[in-house]
Amino acid sequence: MSGLFDNIHPELDQAGAIEILATDFQDLESDSDYYMAVSHLVNFPGQFANEALLNFLGRVSTESAVLLAQRKAVEVLARLGVTQAQAKIASFLDSSDIYMVENAAWALAQIGCQDQAVHQRLIRLLHDSTQNQRVLIQSLSKLSVFAALPTITSLMDHEKSSVRGAAIAATIHLSGDRTRLADLADHLYVANQMDRQSAVQDVIDAGGIELMSSLLQAPISPAFRMRAVRALVDRSSGEQLKNSALSAVDQVLRDDPRLITVLHHYGDPLPTQLLVEGLFHPDFSRGYLSMQTLLDRDPDEVWTHVWSSWHKKAHNDYGAHYFMMHLFGLIRNWSHEALASIHDILSDAIRDRRPQFRKSPSAALLSFAILFPGQCDHFLKDGLTTVMQPFWDFRYTSLLLLQSPELSQIRSQNLDVVSNLSQSDPDYFVRWKAQSILQYT
Image (cartoon, rainbow, N blue to C red; front, side):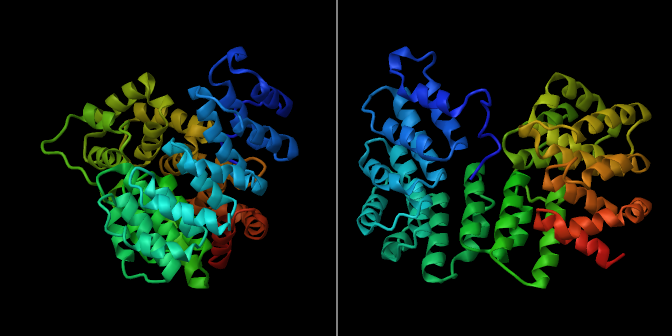
């Protein structure tokens, strides 16, 4: 299982990473070298990396740099699927470090541990409130440990929504009793954003496709909503599902803030400058509230503060950057001066390949097509090929735009490309979208 940020040290090869792990702590160039080397070995599945990681786990040390890297090594071994590491990983369930216990429990679930003795240890840990009960519940559920059901069920009314949600999802998985499923919808709107994000995973684990509407309106990052849509679709089937799935993907990508249920409200009207600052807030509920409110402000005033913020910091803040890409398309009556600058900003954002800004290119393309429909043909043509556009959501967005009446000519000119995507695109959402275009052409 690879991740977008796994290979952030391309200059470091496997031998170099293994050499670092064999180096004495006092001889390291940096305290973070062990962690870097362990993390990097996920890119080299095989015997040499596995042995190096297992040997490193056997190192006895009180140095925080070693302990932190050992926690990471447990994770990496699980991601690499190293089942022979099971016994060593299980031994860390007795660690005094609750974070190592958490990583060990997660890792054992990932590698599919079927040792009944280990299962009993996990159940006993679940009675310890100092441990991460959420991860323990998820691990036991993933391993289908039915013996854990009585203990898990007893936590369905836990004071923490993250523990309650995990217990409800696990109970549904282990027993089939969906009585408490609706509770998970409420968890999508709790005050703490991390708990809202946890609720998304609980809905996924419960197979709660009935809660799709609540998911789509939840004030969380669109990345979490999209992950939930895909995961729930993966667990379901049927032609009707395909249509509802495409509708859900469309909604997440368009991400109209007026369709999001925000949790915060302004007592008194805020100055436009502070609303623009709200786009930087780490809580998406506040970001969406700022977006909703800015849509009712004078476009010239909005542009003054957006332009200033863009140069100061928004161009390099992936959250505010994303919101601004959508904001540009949602406000239609920008001044000519603003439009000239917005044209350049959106053009650059469409081509942006920075990993942290993955959400922005599609959002920028949507706004560009709204504001400059006669100038987006080259972006769309590039977006309809896996060679020029490796990200599925951008290809999907390109197809979504081809459905617009204003772009009917471009659609007619690219039907062969659409037909090819409908059959051979590696992402099934893109294939389905292409098929839906051909169906109504």
